[in-house]
Image (cartoon, rainbow, N blue to C red; front, top):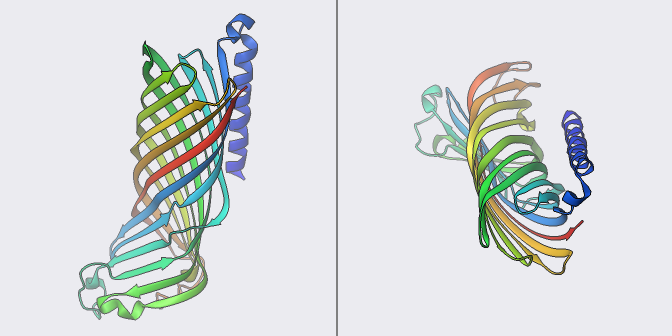
Length: 321
C-alpha cells in the first residue's frame, strides 16, 4: 500500500508540474514546446541476485529478470534544447523462461561429520513466475549543437519493484552433501526486490530534420538503494536485506517519423547495479533442516550483496500531442 500511495503521489506531482509549465508560458513561446506520448512493448532479460556470507559459508540466489512489459512514456521538450521524459513499465504475473538458481558453498569445518568438498555443495533450480512495476523520469539538456549533432547532460531517477514465486524445486547435493539431493512440489519461496537509484551522465543526439533522431546515453549511478524480502516457505523463514551501492547504465534509442504526427521508435539499455549491506533472518515456524525448534529465532547483521545485471529492448508507436 505504501508503494502504491508513493507512486500515485508522484504521478500527481508530475502532472501538476507539466500543467504549471504550460499554463505559465506565453502562447508565442508555447509554440516552441513539443509533447509526445508512446505505447511500447519492452522485453527484459538479466538477473537480480542476493548473495550472503556467513560463518558457515556463502549462499547466492539468482532470480531471472525474464519479463515482457507493457510501457507508456511521455516527453515534453523546448525546441531542441531541453527534454523531460516520464516512463512506466508494468507486467502481470507471467511464467519465466528461466529458473531461479540457488547456490550454496558450505564450510565443512562446522560440520565435522562431513568430508571437505571443493566447489558448490548444494545447488537447486526452481521454475518461476514474476511480475514487475518500473517507473522513472529523466531530464536531458543539449547546450552544445553543431549541424545535425547535439551533446549535453542528463539526470534521471528510477524506481523498480519485481516480485517472484518459485515452485517445484529440484535440489542436488555434491560430495559429502549428496544426502541433500531432493525434489519438492508446490510453492517453495516468494521473493520481492526493489531498486531506487539516480543516474547522471552524457547524452548525444543525431537528427536528420524531423524524420530521424538517434539518441545515445552513458550514465553513472552514483547512489542506489536495494532492498528485498525472501520467504523461504520450506524452512519457515523470512529474510530481509537492505543495501546501498552504485552502478552504470547505457542506452540507445531511435525515432523515425511516419507522418507529421505519428512515429515509431526503438530502444535498448544495459544496467548494472552493485550494492552491499546486511540481512536479517526470522524463523516464523519450526525449520525442519535444523533439528531443533527455532520458531521466533532472529539472526541479524549477515553480510549481503544485491546485484542487478539486465538488458532491455523496446519498440513503440508514438504520436505528437
